Amino acid sequence: MIAGRALSDHDTWLIEFEEEFHELCDGQIDPLWLAGLACTLYPLNKDRAPREAAGVAFTTLGYELPHRALEDFFVLAPPSDRSALH
Image 1: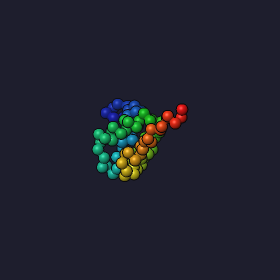
Image 2: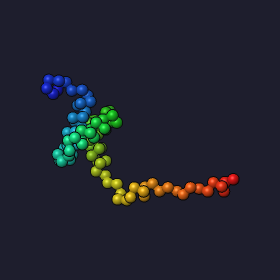
Image 3: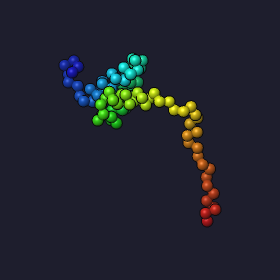
Image 4: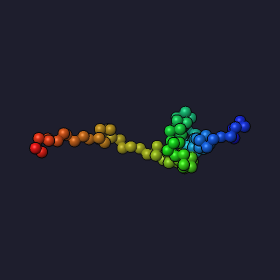
């Protein structure tokens, strides 16, 4: 309850997620970015405990992609010579 108003399940989830993520980052996180992250992840995680979801998000965001150019991940094969099929 905040200011005499009961919180919805949605609001409670967001608050708990943000509190946990904030703690995991030792308070070194932009609050607007964190609110956006929480709102983005809520629809996919509303059935998951918010503190657990924060832990998964924190771990995932801490994982670094290999330092390679994006093109290395999407190498296109040259067009095949379809005339040889006829």
